[in-house]
Length: 80
Image (cartoon, rainbow, N blue to C red):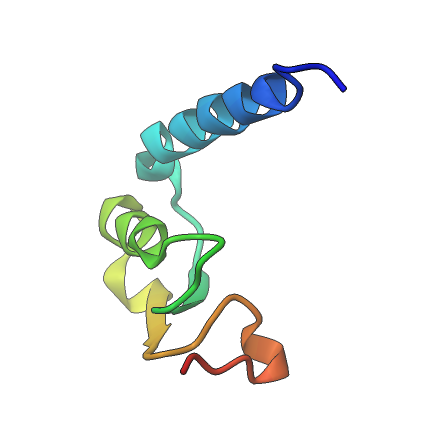
């Protein structure tokens, strides 16, 4: 196993995440985003950032944060 295995993947994840976040302001379509506040895989601040930066009219976008929920909202993955 190579010592630096995985660094290329991590670098790509960071690069793409940065690109997506920088382009949130270009979002103009209606959307609904739901996020658990205890999600350990994807921070809910990203969903909040999308909601705030998207140019979608306020009446056509929705952010719902589920307090204590983890990543899998559809499976009832409650935090402890």
